Length: 274
Image 1 (tube, rainbow, N blue to C red):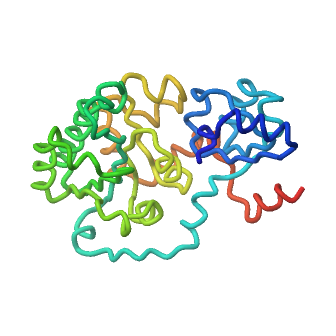
Image 2 (cartoon, rainbow, N blue to C red):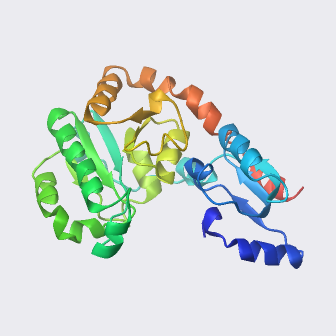
Image 3 (cartoon, rainbow, N blue to C red):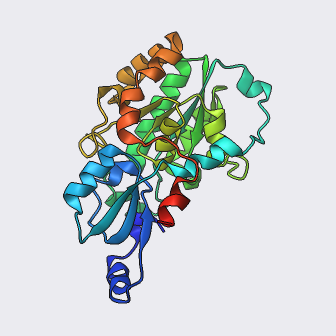
């Protein structure tokens, strides 16, 4: 399970039994919001998160903080892409991966969540539709954690409008569009906070975080270059990407260096064997 989902009670039981617990940071943006957890060894992705953990979860919560790169991206460098870049994708100058939030199919669960309910997710999709109409040189590839939302009647009109636009594609084939394949195909991402967005930023591709109601900025402030609060600010960043992709991307290096440690071959095994 994720590091922050590992039961604290189980960690305490492991300590009593003298069983060492080891975890690797899964999502950088939750380091300032999650409840405290307990591990003997915790591998953290970058200095920004490390500083937060040192303040929020000092020993005895986390006994040893160790540095590691975003190891989930290792396959990105070793796995060959199996997706054929057909004409549907080659017709566009840029491929934008759109990363959304999960929509609960149950109306009661939906009503209880303030950040990922149907209305808020629909507003996000409407922004994507507007962007697609105004940026015909970009194809918007919607990568969802799951695709329950396409079966929810609330989104029926939105899905219909998306299907009528040539430069929006919903990546429903999850066997084909794995996280690694998606990272390989995309040039940049427009994202709500997800671990996949962090991976894309780590492999040196730009990410624009959609910041609504101060989330995630109020919890994990990456700086102005990373956030867009509305359609206008997203469009402004897209224009900069179109104008000079390399310059836009290099301007994010300062943030990358704070968020991530550099990739080191064999780092994890070396640390575990100490």
